[in-house]
Structures are given as structure tokens and as C-alpha cells.
Image (cartoon, rainbow, N blue to C red; front, side):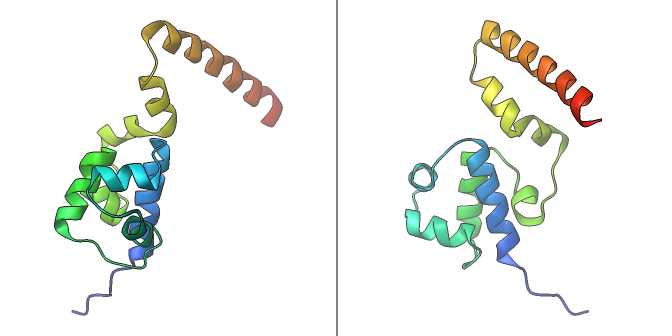
Length: 115
């Protein structure tokens, strides 16, 4: 059985998406995982592979699974880590309720306009 070479571009895009969802800069993540911004940029662009220790550090820093980074497989817990949920988690309870009401109005407006 022949194994196809791994395309690092997909992995890099997922790292970048997870980083941006958490509103981190490359410099911030690079510092968290003890890597240069240049090396992280190369990872995100799929120009280089990733070591196991770097993969573990990235997963911890971005709160994602290795399955997601390597294969794009999201687990049930990861659905709570989308950009909106991450933003909401940064708010206090009163602010979250206000944001929820705003989102409900927005969703209803979208249904009326786009359907």
C-alpha cells in the first residue's frame, strides 16, 4: 500500500484559522509556543512540516485537537471553539445575554431577507 505524502498546506490553514478565531497574532502564538514568528508563518503557509512537540504546543495554545490540526476532524467539544463562542466567552454574564439578544434579532432579520 502506497501512502501519499502529507499536504502541509491544509494543516497550516487550520492552524491559521484557529489562531485567527482566537484573535491572536502570529507573534503572540509564536511566543506562547516558543517559536519564531517566521517559523510559525512558514507553518501556516504549509512550507514546512511540524514536530510532535510543536504540534502539542500549538494544540494547547489554541485549544484545538491534534486531529483537527492534522486531519480537519472536529470533535464535539471543538464546536464550542468557533469564533462567535470564543468572543462570547470573553464577556461577563450580562454582556453575554445582551449579545445573545442581538444575535437573535440578526438571525431573524437574515431569515426574512435571505430566504
